[in-house]
Length: 302
Image (cartoon, rainbow, N blue to C red; front, top):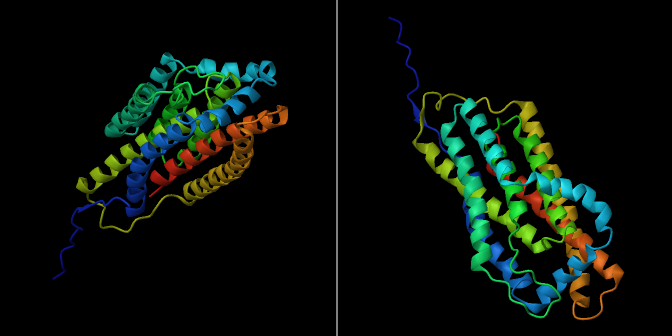
């Protein structure tokens, strides 16, 4: 007699180990890194002097650059945050991922609330620099730009994720640099904002990964076809691009920081100010690129 055909029993879909480890590391490291930025560049005279030189350098060409920077910053508003959050929820619901919609809202709300609380918890004392303007770390505008972009990366389908991450990194970097052009924020403010968003994104991805093993799936025992080759290829290309941009911008930022650190207590001429200005902008671009590269790793196609 023919033997009956038995279907594989439902198995539980285990979350990939490497993204889970990265999520744990980033959830812990990002808050520490934000505190370290504050401790070095806000709570010390040397750090304030270094960023003041970059702040002064932003005066050069400000009138011309403000034509673009002003338009970028005008986009950021309460209405923009609401519209972006609603868009993320709609995309997630359309994909029948209601829990993912909640995670996107948690990311946006948590990151922006954290930024406002950090400004209160970590004060900025007047240590003798020319201007202090109170505590501006982290940058609220950059937090908004990065958080809504990261939320969209979470909810879009895997094939669209690399393109959204690339656009999100560009928009976050543009917003951060624009705040320096406007002389609203210093470089450390913007870098801290990206770290706040990355920390919340890592936490959200960690919660999602820890939930996955409890979700039964009837196809868990079947061979996985994996993501389409085109999607995986796009993911790798964008990830490589973001890492390379971050590395190149990081080198520029480090060179400029080293030079600015040596002249901080003396007289900084126009060249020093412009170098510090360029280095600060490069640090912002590096932070934005690496933030969204890390987010791609956390949300890699499976």
